[in-house]
Length: 237
Image (cartoon, rainbow, N blue to C red; front, side, top):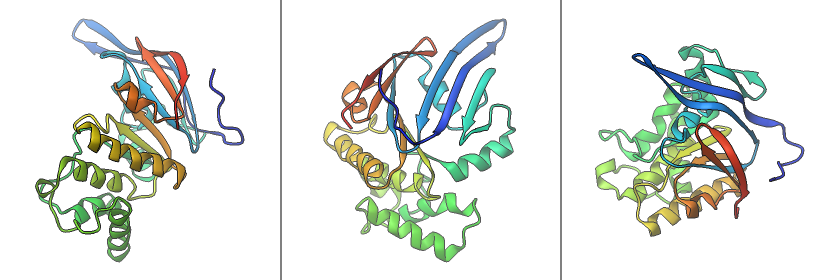
């Protein structure tokens, strides 16, 4: 059993979380009593075979969906039954997302992509601009501010996505297969940035991956099967 960080209360807790989808006359159980606790400043990986419930678990952790039953606590507050409007506000303030497909807006520059999430938090334009420039420099793309996604390599696009995930200074960064569309060398560069975010910036990082070598970058690895955690192993971080 892996010891949790002492002195920190859980920032996210899933307690006996179930997610059952009704598909016509058939019920599909994606999560079956999932329990997970993540403390502030931890770096964890969630692994599992296809169909294990990884994506559904990520949706629950990221406030993208609510459970059929069970409890989800974020900073000690129950968010299990909130409406979409409230969930959206929580996502914007508390959680940054990094996606396998990058999800950058193709008509916007790198700088504008990073500024976009700040608009929804009513951050003044001058502050948005300054913060976006600082974040691009953080991911070593200070010379690519005016480039659009199709003018950037895959690794550069993912680094823009990492910078965008930090736009509102979230407490938690969720990374969904962050190296899935990258070659191994570029993937290692992206993982290096995630490790720096964890160690130097103190960010809580939750990463979903099917790659065991990538998963080992975390402090601990939670193995998911049939919608629940079946074992927990220590990573290298």
